[in-house]
Image (spheres, rainbow, N blue to C red):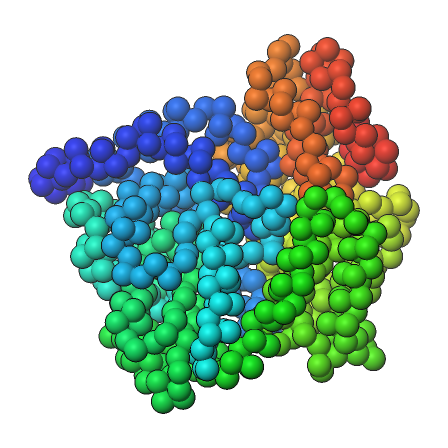
Length: 604
């Protein structure tokens, strides 16, 4: 039931949620943001694309009539270091669309009112630099991050002292009342829109054990929407630094660097920044706040190393002198690694100081782009000992020629309790879904072990297990995994879609009946959407232009040019009685479907 005044707010909300604006939001920003979330969808939400107009009108109607309800989000942990984990939030695509639309409605005004041109964060809008690997970069547009880097490289040379700092547990301590006050003071935003924005954020905030809403704690989501709002929380610090006696200032989200001419000025600006933040119940991170001399800053920011890599990157991008580039990159990698007796980075390794981790990721990217590799053992060391490098290491490990050997070592890590977070299981599953393996009994048994361990860890682990089972296990084994977890799957949006994503495995097979009974018992509209999409692909006598393009396209960022959700869609295509005419070049476009023994056994 709405209050009588809601009728006067309705037109304002309808303006923000115009169907044309919602469509642009979905295509340009929401869909790219969804792809960056940890948990992928079985069919990459192609069913939503196919019936997008209905979704947009439904969202607009629910919001403008005051009936919109935020779906239950899912929490997962990603390890930062030493068992300390960041809690991330996975939200329903519809809620992400609403959040992006609300954020976008105030973004340009917030940007225009920014007190400093040295605050470089901008939302990425789904666009990335050529050859850029998203897994190597955390948030915001790559172009704005490069500007930030260029700026601090410059004043690290110009100033006698550099302050480097960030905000302690920034997202966790953002107060929504302060956020509301800041946004309303900067942007001409209607109260109804601001109410809805704070309402959505509150419903996405972690409130465990039936505790009341606290109005504190921005949910950490793989989206630009929350970052745009969080960025505005630091405008007061920007203003302070712009009007203080500092020589240079640069900020990217909560990473802040200030150039000054004396220790005294450095300490004064740190004091004032911290007091400014305290007025909003935030604090500087004392463990990461440093006052560096010019020489120390030069080393911290790895300026000479960045310059040398940028020169080599020019050759790699143009495809020139690649043999020379590979030699130089290997030499630099080994020198900067300063390998220890145990095989990891030594005490003097560049990779473990200051901006060294960024150099580590950059040099790895160039090595592989130039057509070379580093040893599997180096990457496995990072997987085991360095959680921040784990996604990057596993992505490059998926290109190994020793897939079975690497898998043996990864499963040993799983069984030995190396991984304490949810994200690790998703990363290992990504390796298992995309790397090349010889089909052996031992390899299959290790996949079975992974599915058993992962499913027991929680919903994110079960999600990973379902997809790994699709590639490695028999249909009867997959059915047992589904039946054993039907209650967990039925109540969960992401798990129910994952379970229905296995439809193409069972179509036309002897096990079709039990699987169909499972879907009926699941009684999930979300699963039905995926099931109906894949069934339609397997039975249709014609494909639309979008599906034809999707079928043909290869994705060279994966070792076999296939992202696993596409394998599930292509399997439905292969089981279509008219596939010879609808997709005549299916196996030419994607030779791995036949050549890879584990893809082949799926039914290709």
